Amino acid sequence: MSAILELRDVGVRFGTFDAVDGVSLTVNAGEVVGLIGPNGAGKTVTFNVITGLQPATRGRVLLGGTDVTRQPAHVRTAMGLSRTFQVVQLFAGMSVLQNLMVAAHRHTHAGVLVDALRLPGRGRALRQAEERARAVLAFLELSHLADLEVTSLPVGQARLVELARALCLTPTCLLLDEPASGLDPGETADFVALLAHVRSTLGCAMLLVEHDMGVVMPLCDHVIVMDFGKVLASGPPLEVRDDPAVRAAYLGEEVH
Ligand SMILES: Nc1ncnc2c1ncn2[C@@H]1O[C@H](COP(=O)(O)OP(=O)(O)OP(=O)(O)O)[C@@H](O)[C@H]1O
Ligand SMILES: [Mg+2]
Image 1: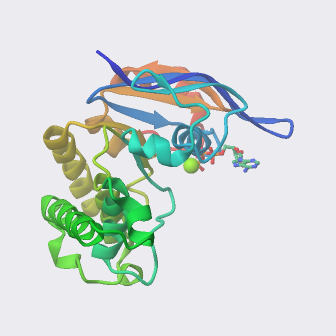
Image 2: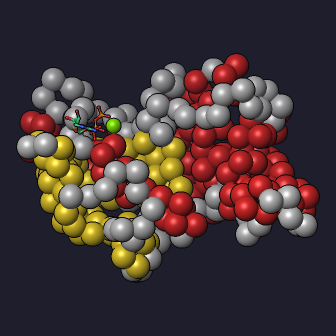
């Protein structure tokens, strides 16, 4: 199997505090990997290192075997990395379709420069972006939301729109930071089914941060547990769930 994403001994230090401390992990093509751990374990900081929002203090990040440790976020996006955020981050004041088009448009070769300079090809690039955005909405059965303003959406739908926006970038690796948080049990079950559908249809690899074991267990091929910035355990979902060290780390939090 080929590694789509690899972290080698990554560390992030804030002052004297090691938020991430020597994390190594691999996500292979088409694989769904869960990244779990108690609050403050370092999961989101790890995500931010992967996407390029947070510089690593040490270690290396590789995408498809290429070292991107010093590459900015947009280069990594162009290499097939796409994410959703723990707290939904959509562009307020814009419709669902416009939110998706921004992502799809950045992804086209024409992109922002052609747009800014009003060069020929701008109209075509916008049409392509709209086509892509509408296709993704149809794929996720969200076409009926296209013209709604994003801040009018309940959290369940906003999370789906964020997923749709991430898919507009045609990712080979999708990073999902607590995508089911704020969803009720019914919405969560639908979301799990949807991610399984995305996986089987698009075949993109996923790294999934999630507290809800009802999401992690059915979706993940492999689970990595973080605690205090380090990898505490790593393995098949059932094995990791039953690991006494993992259970101890979650003391006071429920692991189902
Ligand atoms: N910019 C920062 N400066 C200083 N400390 C930070 C910064 N960002 C995160 N931290 C700290 O790093 C640690 C890891 O944070 P992180 O957000 O990665 O946790 P997490 O595993 O995602 O937790 P949660 O499950 O609550 O989302 C926390 O103690 C957090 O307070
Ligand atoms: Mg987090």
